[in-house]
Image (cartoon, rainbow, N blue to C red; front, side, top):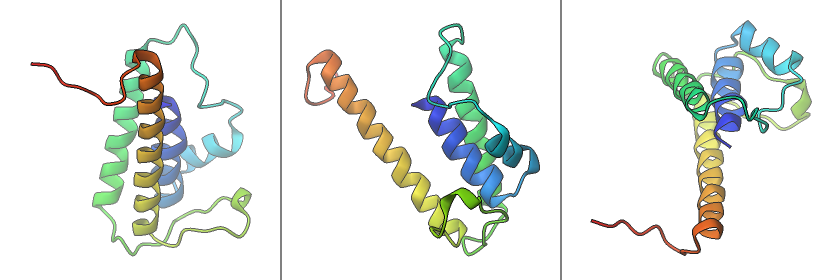
Length: 121
């Protein structure tokens, strides 16, 4: 899930769509990698660090643009669906990230059997 958020959300929406970064666009169009799959050999810390790095890049891109800025690139594979501004993309990313956080919370509940995260002192 974290790898998906890193590559398919932070990198895709901000580096490729908003910034129009050619390397990120080529990664999107030419990659056969599935961001949902992480090799068992890849350390968890590398996945987390990639997410942190892509989130920091996204923060930098957001900080340099108006929320009304139009995307620099838009992929053909969405058909007629389109987001028109940085504001709409930020809201989409917040929603997607929150949705996946909910998925992770559900998985945690299934693993530990607790309905709510209880903090202990």
